Length: 71
Image (cartoon, rainbow, N blue to C red; front, side, top):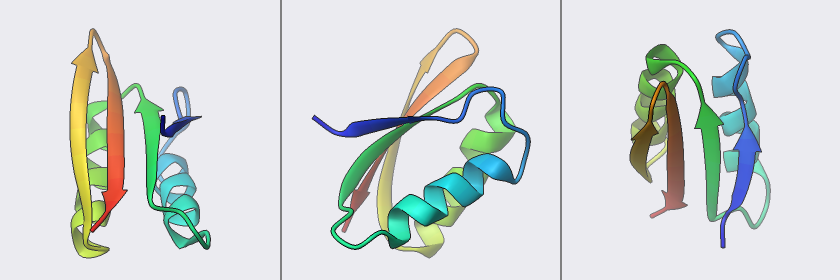
């Protein structure tokens, strides 16, 4: 099971910085992040594309669970 990082309530660019830090962590290959804004979801999706990570998003109300996997 992937670890879940909670970025709800954080303002940009904090969710993106949190995700970037996790991507750069040695041995990191799969993790999830919970966000509560579409802007954070979109910014993290762009970052994942630039960093060559796969990303999928599940929406639950106003929250998004993003799953990131290293290619």
